[in-house]
Image 1 (cartoon, rainbow, N blue to C red):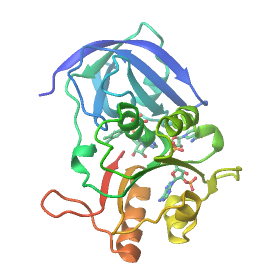
Image 2 (tube, rainbow, N blue to C red; image 1 turned 90 degrees about the vertical axis):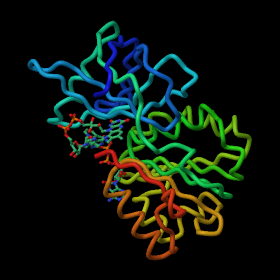
Image 3 (tube, rainbow, N blue to C red; image 1 turned 45 degrees about the vertical axis):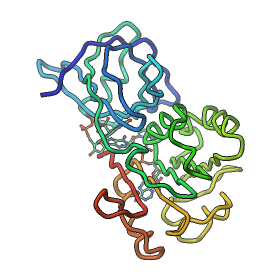
Image 4 (cartoon, rainbow, N blue to C red; image 1 turned 180 degrees about the vertical axis):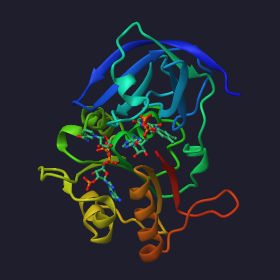
Length: 248
Ligand SMILES: Cc1cc2nc3c(=O)[nH]c(=O)nc-3n(C[C@H](O)[C@H](O)[C@H](O)COP(=O)(O)OP(=O)(O)OC[C@H]3O[C@@H](n4cnc5c(N)ncnc54)[C@H](O)[C@@H]3O)c2cc1C
Ligand SMILES: NC(=O)c1ccc[n+]([C@@H]2O[C@H](COP(=O)([O-])OP(=O)(O)OC[C@H]3O[C@@H](n4cnc5c(N)ncnc54)[C@H](OP(=O)(O)O)[C@@H]3O)[C@@H](O)[C@H]2O)c1
C-alpha cells in the first residue's frame, strides 16, 4: 500500500481554458527526474487518485504538475478547481521507469511528447544530470494549437542553457504557425520533415527515442520506427532504441 501525505496547493496557473499547472508543497520522498506521483482528492466520500508526472527537477521543493482538464473526467476537473491553500493528497513515493537510468548511451536522445506529457522531459532537462553521455538532445512538443505550447518560454530558456546541445521543435496539428511543424509526429517522421527541421537523423546508429503521452501517438510512432527504421523497444534484457510511457 502506498503511503499518502497531505500537501498544500501553493499556485494554480491556467495557460488556456483547459491546460493548467499546479504547484504543491508536500513532504514527499526524493524522486528521480521523469517519474510520476499520484494526486488524490476525496470526492463523494472516496479518494479518487490519478498519476501525474513531476515537471519540477527533484532538487526543487515546489512540486509542479502540468495538467489538462479531461471533459467528464473523474479527477482532473476537480484539480482544475483548486485554489492556493487547498489541501491535496500526494503519494509520498514516486514511481515509474521513464528515467535516464533506463536509457542507453547514444549520440542523439530524442524526447517526443504530446500535450501534458512534456512534463517528464522538463524535469529531466531542468535537473540536467546524466546528460553528458549524449551529444545531442532533441525535445519535441506536439500539441493541437499553438496556444497549448504552455512551456515554450521554459523550453527556449533550456535551449539557451544547453548552449547548442539541446534542439527544440514544436509541432502543432490543427493550425499552421511559423516555426512549428504542422501535423502529427508519426507522419512528420515518415516524411522526413521532423529530422529536416531539427537537422539530425533518427536511426539505429545514432539515436534513442523517448515517447510520452497519447498512447495512440506512442503506438503509431513505435510501429513506424520499427517498420521503417528497424528500431526496437528498449528492455533491460534486450537493448533497443525506444523507451515509452503511456498516459492512459
Ligand atoms: C504514468 C502517467 C503519468 C501521467 N501524467 C499526467 C500528467 O502529467 N498530466 C496530465 O494531465 N495527465 C497525466 N496522466 C493522466 C492522468 O493520470 C489522468 O488519467 C487524467 O488526468 C484524467 O483523469 P480523470 O479522472 O479526469 O479522467 P478519467 O475519468 O479517468 O478519464 C480518463 C480518460 O481521459 C483521457 N485522458 C486521460 N489523461 C489524458 C491526458 N493527459 N490528455 C488527454 N486525455 C487524457 C483518456 O481518454 C482516458 O481514457 C498520467 C497518466 C499516467 C499513467
Ligand atoms: N487541447 C485543447 O485545447 C483542449 C481543450 C479542451 C479540452 N481538451 C481535452 O483534453 C484532452 C487532451 O487533449 P490534448 O490536446 O492535451 O491531448 P491529445 O488529444 O493527446 O493531443 C495532443 C497532440 O497529440 C496528437 N495526436 C493524437 N493522436 C495521435 C496519434 N495517433 N499519433 C500522433 N499524434 C497524435 C494530436 O493531434 P490531432 O490534433 O491530430 O488529434 C495533438 O497534436 C482531450 O480529452 C480533449 O478533449 C483539450
